[in-house]
Image (cartoon, rainbow, N blue to C red; front, top):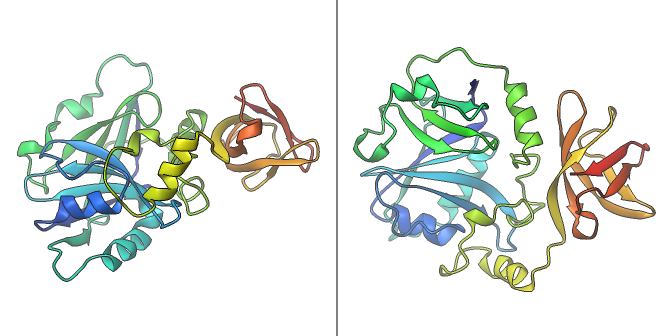
Length: 280
């Protein structure tokens, strides 16, 4: 079992008011209009041209929604959301990132649930927003939980190990992979985009790319050589094939956005410095 303090990796933003679900529904890619207490759904907030502002997991309580979004983008996301609140919208936001802890618990052996989770409430329906609760998640390809609101934190593993795990499992994170340079589909966030819902900001661009079945680039796992670094261009012959966005501590693996023409398992690329790169 691995346990990470993710309090400064994910933000905790409370959304209240009678229009909270409808507002988030029309602002993002997910289906949130009819979310019920106890449910958890994923969504992406995008610009008018479909670029990512942030990604969020939305947890529904009886009288509020809690968004687990990117810590680094939290102020930007709040400014973006408040800009679109109209005079007749009953919706309020509060940043609880400094008041609620956030622990990630992952069973890398896929065996039994982590002991810490067994001691707290897993069903958010009957839990006060001020009481610890857990949300099932598999952000690292393993059985895991987001545990929110513990008063006493357990022993945790180094956050760098979490980064290594997410990179090796192809999980996008802000600000490296989740930013306004890319659209959700390029980041592999298909499960957070509902194509049958109504309009939202950025919907036209995203729907057009899905209908055409053509993406300019895709987020891919890469096998790298020591010396490859975040920001390195990926090269194939004389062509620019993409860019490295994250690298593991040992330099053996990376994430990068690769042009679709080169985003194939086994594709060989290099950096401008001559480091060999293999698309996994």
